[in-house]
Amino acid sequence: MYTHPWKRFGHDRLYVHLDDETSIGYWDRTTDELHPASAKHAETLTTFIAEWRKQDAVASSAPPQTATA
Image (tube, rainbow, N blue to C red; front, side):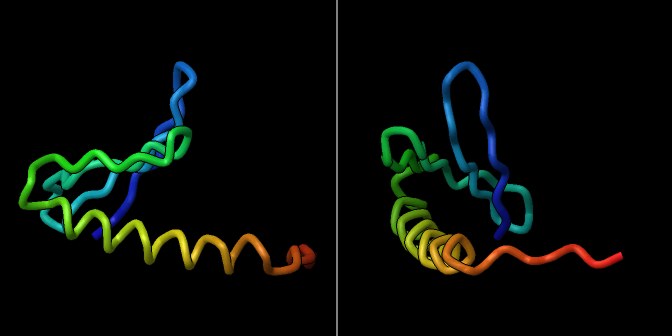
């Protein structure tokens, strides 16, 4: 699976796709709501976003990297 962030017109969304490019839905980061593309993708989207948020929290709490020349 892969993600595609989208920020426009006051929206901040993270779209989630299967490797075959099938959209399974998106997470609205502003409202913290999940929007599965269909009922069959709801559980997959929920699980994926939960894991993504854990990884993002770890990455966000890491100290900034210093650029090397």
